[in-house]
Length: 257
Image 1 (spheres, rainbow, N blue to C red):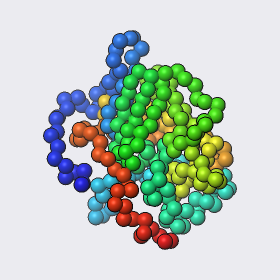
Image 2 (image 1 turned 60 degrees about the vertical axis):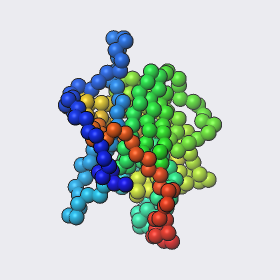
Image 3 (image 1 turned 60 degrees about the horizontal axis):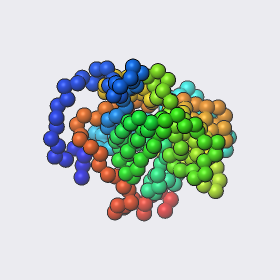
């Protein structure tokens, strides 16, 4: 069902989107910004002449380094791999085959996400694959080793003023460095050696900036940072499940089959 065809009872919020960001329950003088809410990527990519699709994507979905001077600092093997994947039009993108896309793609895909902030834990629920992410903010350190690597890794967060700084390690890796997550449709790789840092800053009531830094010395010659803009969703009461394994019809038509 198309998102815009749903029957909704829309409650008009009286809070302007440019109003101050809300704070967590003010039981103490050091109350932090509350990131809770339903968010999506800011749709700032021009639509084609025939109009945008319902699931409108941003430039970083295709090229996570879009806007970076000189592009991403690939290691030689990674640059060659990305060129091959681009030439093949991303036919082997794991997310096109209903495999979870990983932490970075959950930021750039067109589906919505719901932040639930509690003392000691930030939970993010994603429409894509009806999946979740846990960010521990209770003071625990990152583990020296992660026994069970996962698509989204293991994440801990600390507050730097009004910005939540999240560090993540322990990303799922295949048999070789080429078998890790794709960061974008171009096929920019992520290896098991990666450490990702996100800085979540709720600028005002309706806007949030995420500064994302990837430090993966196996795939890149130096760490690199991008900015992702998210906006608060006010026209929908909740998330919709999206799972590409339900009546999946695309795989047989992928290029190279």
